[in-house]
Image 1 (cartoon, one colour):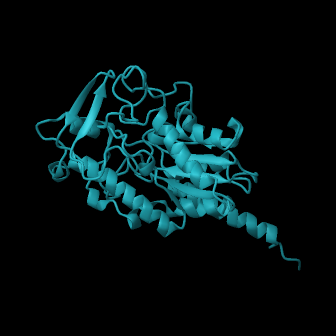
Image 2 (image 1 turned 120 degrees about the vertical axis):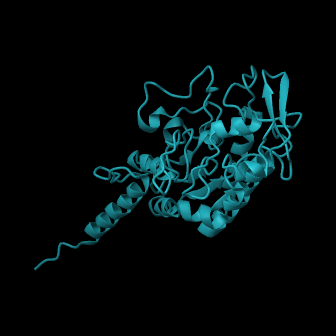
Image 3 (image 1 turned 30 degrees about the vertical axis):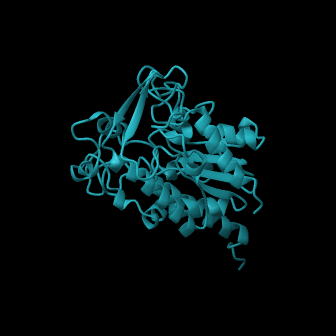
Length: 331
């Protein structure tokens, strides 16, 4: 009897199994999840609003594409760092897969681990963004770079109900009575920075990293950090209005500490996962929200239109250059 277990069939079954694992992590169906064999795109970007950086302010210009479906509804700014990175790499638009989306998380879903529904927590996860890229045939031997920037929007610890959503940020920034010091953590108004650790970060994204490493074996996987919103040890937070006035929240230590813990956790996670960490905080140092020359959008700023507290075009250029510095290095 001739066996039907040929090497090709075994590889196909392994491929189906791997895609099934990724789809299960994304909590979406797997009936048509097996991506057709493809050479892949050169650059794949996965991330949140700091990656997508849409040209909307969420006040007068909504950040939703009414004609889009799925990830195609995620708007991307023309000067966002993946776009600028693609230009530095000399890529055309067809060789860049940008699945970043505002409100995206590593794996924080709309409910907590105890089943508590949390309004507003409905952004895409890393697994869902990666699955969409796989369906587009973006992972393959031609893929040179897979850049990931996520973590800020997640609940820490994983099953917690508190996330640094826009409403939490704005409440902390403009509440001069309570502020956003350690009391905000105790009052469940802000995530606990102590829960943001490298091992926890690595565990939450390990399955997707393994998947990408298998299907894009020649790619550099870059875990991209966040820009310097505020320097370490700072206790205040600033918000510019109309490009002319500045609001200062003097009690923002918990917010600043959270950003710094993310930086440390990302670096440690990259080491644990065996991937690159891109320190863009160093590339944007001295241009934080309270600096004389912030590389961030303010509220209704006529010179820097976009989401408040998100990088301006200059900030995105610095991030793109930092990532390109890693990409350009030989393996």
